[in-house]
Length: 605
Image (cartoon, rainbow, N blue to C red):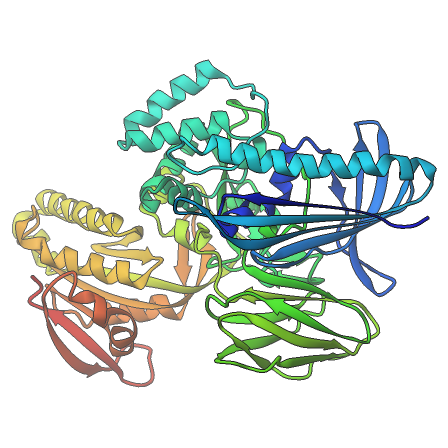
């Protein structure tokens, strides 16, 4: 039987970026459109081709199974997907959407032309009869989805995707009780109200695996405040937290752990075909879901390979064996790379003004060149698959998701440590952190303090000093890891936060209850190992040792950092915090072979 082709065109008064966001979120689109949920197998590589088996029951009763091949797309321009059916009335479906900007405008609103094409290959007369109904229905559902978005967002304060046309069973009595508790502990009333609306008016996919920073950006709220609200909501039982294990190569979730104790140091990726060791910086994310006692949200999949599954990927291309293809790519937003699925080979992308269709060749051992130059404004390049297998290449950002709350981030949060002190790794696990700033303090002259005023009074002053340190460490997104005698060890996710906390500790000391005390501070940034030490989330390694040794060079009322860190991390930002004097000096640190160049910050005001 011959292939049947259906095409539609529609002009909508939305910018192309918004239309792409709407229609490339294929899992949500299919869910809201009332399509059936799908079970996908792990990635397969059979007949020299990469795909997943997909199974579903059409209309809830008719079983269907097909091979779903990887989506192809160019961000904000087009996407397509091919399905080859194992049985049933249809042999093959190729669905594509194309987005073109238009000169037509309504006021200051730009317009986009949507071009949809469905190519059906019937397997029998039944398929031939059903195709017109299926094709027209699919087109109609897409346009209803776009129209629904336009209608719903005319009067909304915050932009949101269309939702399923049904109510969700919510325990309103329990929700009201816990909402009241959340209002008490979280003083930002508007944020609490937005969370409650989100939990009651959004679909299951949007109340499961929520990302606080993403919602904060959507609500135009402070990220740290929204994260604090999510932690507090989890503590009272409104939400539940989980740790999502990301593949460091394709950056797609591969497993989930309900508790940090369930996090393992190694994860397997079926798409990349390899095992990876975890780290706290990028590969472990904390996400949140509505608590089942509030609402029973169902975790179902409607589409697994759409562009929004991998928003860091600007272009994905299927490359036929022994063929040269010319592929398009959009404007490049920053540092990029081209990577091959399964083979895990990659080539760096460098920006050039006007390369003339550069070429990449892929042989049996991978890319023949380690880099390629592309036009930062977008264009096209040639890629030659010289292997005997179909390959899938992706053009992707090197930068990781800036909206992710990583384990390294959360472990350096004082609120998280206070609320969830038992959230630690299993005692047999050690996980690395690529970059963390460790700050050590010490109380100068504490021994004589005990001798002069007695143990009880001295302890009270030391305790107040701990409260003072905790205040400024917490205010700057850091966490006290532990106290050691009269010393404090603290951790910060961002170096800038650490130096700001150190300066504020010294800069505000004269106005505090512990103004008579002299505090010594040193800090250092680098990799560390996260461990469970006596049911405490602790850090070990060279960075911790260096921070402790650098603190020993402090004389009190000052802050000591390494000269290298100063020039790379702190120099430009310190002047925005406090005025201070700087002294460069060299010192021998205990256990460190060579002298280290340091900077002492004094007269901090």
